[in-house]
Image (cartoon, rainbow, N blue to C red; front, side):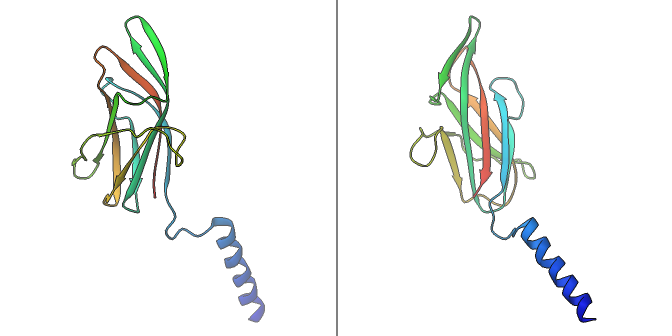
Length: 139
């Protein structure tokens, strides 16, 4: 019987080491691509810790003449999060320029309720569509 408990205990420890601890860890929701003015949801983020982060990079501006690389200037973009369950949305926020905490423009959403949100990115440039990459996670 002691041998069975010893084997079971070793197996349990090995599983914890392999799978890690999940308590309090932030959820990384991944990266994806977005295009403004296409009428589609730009991405999703699942919030477990009441604090969401959305960053954008690799931005390009498209118009009828082609496209311009705009690097990391996201001054024309605004973003909001909308709840899948209630449909309620945050107000639109402008992206903050990169600083010591991020290498690309970002927005923080504090005091969020736990749940799944879709990301809605819009641009303020008439006659342009902005394409780029987003990253989303919670803290």
